[in-house]
Length: 211
Image (cartoon, rainbow, N blue to C red; front, side, top):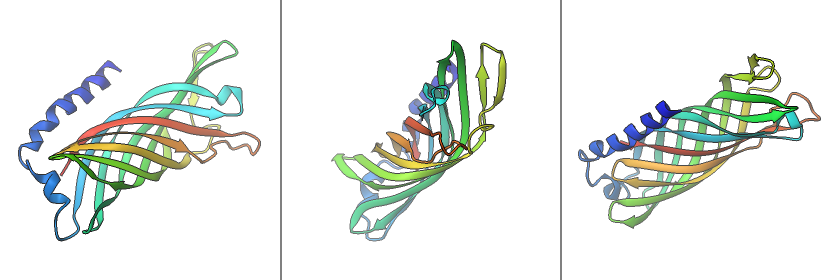
């Protein structure tokens, strides 16, 4: 985890260097006569959990890594409204102590968000960007470790790989430097049992650059 935090801090300190190449990009992009688009890179942290009506699957917060790339398109040149999508590698899961057994669940997803953003100029080149939308995700790996029995199994051995839900949050952009925080509210039931529910919950913080 120290290595992950160091990597995120390095990106956060390095991104202002990119901004010097396009010092007025934020303001000009929102006042152009034609619709605009942008690309971006993101790196961040997830604080996720699993919500279930079954005690052994109801898990507390787990910290994981997220990174990916995004693409945004202005919907109309008369308004600062943007449609943004992308592709992320996202670690989710949870931790619990059930029947005196410590269990850690890590679930790796490839996740595609789709959100609508509205940009508000707060000060000079500083923009707020609240967003709302959703996401779909496919599980691509991960392990569930039981420290009492010293055993591990695939995190998707008992649950479905596909997840989907709502995404809300707010971004902050200064020239090319971008940061955001938000929440993914899983709506899909990952359980393979019709009488059980397992849903993801995830608080995320990302930093990066827009081009």
